[in-house]
Length: 134
Image 1: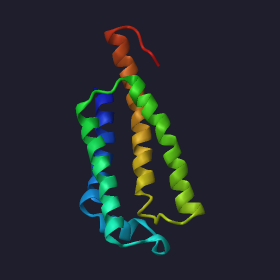
Image 2: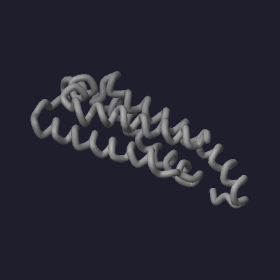
Image 3: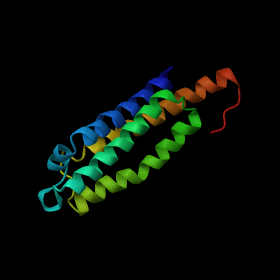
């Protein structure tokens, strides 16, 4: 049950931040990007909304598909490059504002949820089938 709650938390991050980008792309760009990198054109808002739509789609899938321990472990690993991205585009090339670092906060929440969910799912899987793959 704890693994499923962690999975729902991951979905909520995607649905929350993705929904914001989907329905309010101009607002996201105004708050999340520094002035030097802000581009308020139709195409920029369109691309931000597309990014949000993909995040919402993944959030919905995270709600309806049951992840095993292996899926949670793999998702934790694939999140690691996003931490590098957040650091680079906030500290080295100042594209992201402090509010733009909500992406970092979301990634951190999901990473911790993956680790907690992975441990819980391993226990659940050991109790059910006795064999755990990761």
